[in-house]
Image (cartoon, rainbow, N blue to C red; front, side, top):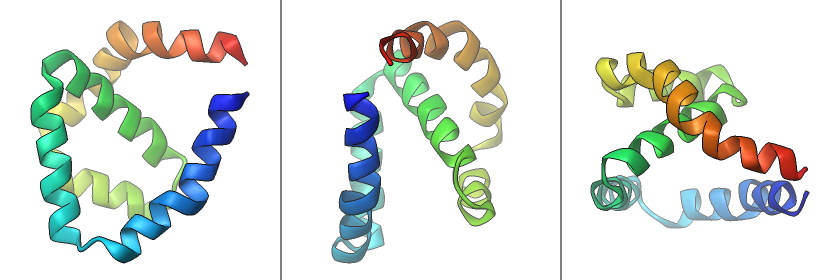
Length: 96
């Protein structure tokens, strides 16, 4: 329950503040650095998490995801979700 509350607060306050204060180019550069440093496994988990979050958003966010993420990784998301993400995210679901 705490994790959900923290994520809701982050989405309500932190994400909009960053979107307003930090230029898009800097956000994109930072995101690319983070993904490069994650490594293969963690970057796959991150991508699936992003996909899951986008599915809860409006059509514009979903379209942006389609535009920004290359086709091959998008096609791999269901497999990575099943083989990697669900095993780790399931622990969070059980804690609620």
